[in-house]
Length: 425
Image (tube, rainbow, N blue to C red; front, side, top):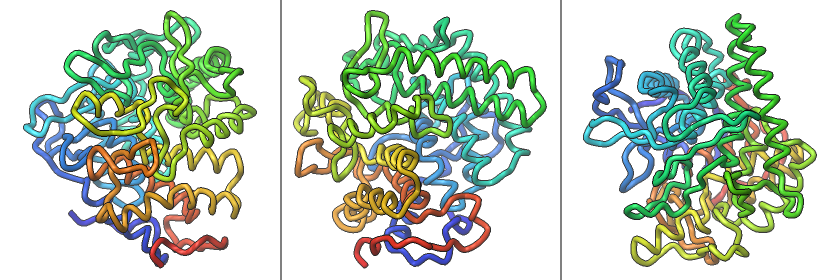
């Protein structure tokens, strides 16, 4: 399917062209889901090749890089409309079976990623009509359902924090399971779920103000402020200099994981800014590899640095140490926020992306895989091509290395800062 011109024009860059070609390969038109209200074929994004059906969460995490930056605005609109049509009690589908059977609803965070995608749509297109006429009601419905409680054990605490308790179901993106065994259950209040919740509340408040729902706007602002206060009180682990990963009913999980980056990188950051540098220090020290971020610190007894062996062994390592390229996206934005978009910062971020860019143009044969071993030499693993990996790396490269932001999309970008030559140049 042809795409419109990407927002980056007039820049000869081998890495950028490779990323754009990789992004194109995930966009598909599939049979209409049986419960869809849409008259056309439902557009979805393949989560990964050679396996994994289209996935709601993956598509929304990759949304900006896969659809907006390449100029696929029609497909982006269709994805948002399809997801809105398929929402059930505020929860959006996490997986679309390839046989066109009904979608599956397993992700507590998918709907909140949708709200963030609506924000990204406005940031890149300024098209309010789609949001006002087709998406705004869904955004408000998500907030209301999460407030009052809905499926997957999603419920709001009195202090505003969001919890998800669903025995036997992994409702976060760390969803590996073998049979009835959930490898990383994370029951309770995951840090990224609450970062996304605060972000969604602030986006919803902004939309309400934009569309003259001022009473709702005030309500959502007040709730977002309550969430911010509770988050900083309950999630901060002073002894480690970073956030707890999950606040459970029986206490806090001090595992050092990358999920806390969303408390800094989302449009509306929930973590107090004076804590950002300490979190980045921990992330760089314990999780950063040349190919992505480890899902667990090497010092943790549960750490698994090799993704290999039988199914159980692989699932045990899936989110217990494997390094994910897609997490370089949130890290890049967090670094830019803490340090400013300076020449030095741009070059540092380029260095963090270098391993994936080289892999794309060499061993990856034009794609970026799902994960790498947490231990050196960081062998590739999982799916050979991942929408999240490509989408997030592409967004980080365009916005934080090339410095091309959406407001500049109507004119050829300039590059007034020196950066290292593209990989392979």
